[in-house]
Length: 199
Image (cartoon, rainbow, N blue to C red):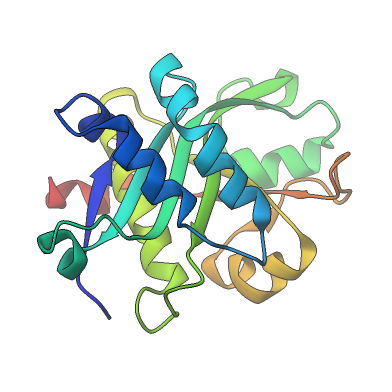
């Protein structure tokens, strides 16, 4: 695995680092399998960051960073989400929520959203694995969980990514149907306390 550094986008936007240099690095990020990842990074990551709608974290190649170049190996964006559970049966609610107070009468539940997560085509799984990117995501979310609690994660993905990756990482389908964009909503309950020691 290559050495990398996780840099919060807000950290460099609030520094003397020129925004144009950040935008140039974004334009070099390529993910042909999921071009939405390219589009989000170029057009939405900075506005989402500035409005507080979502926070983006960059996994940057340490070797190139020492040479003055920002090469984004991967990135992820996290946010908060209110999840609609009105269509779930009481049996499914019990499975998803466990002993959550007032479970059977709830219409929504709070969750942490992994809005974007992907690796650049310039780097392989050996350079930086999907599992490692996901672990970095968990570490970032654990900071919020340490203060306000919460253990529910949600994300959206296509069927092939569910079977190829997310199912192996312990995610399950929240609904059996896809949404308007042909994406499944997945969920995972996680104990974030195991990540707190890092901080």
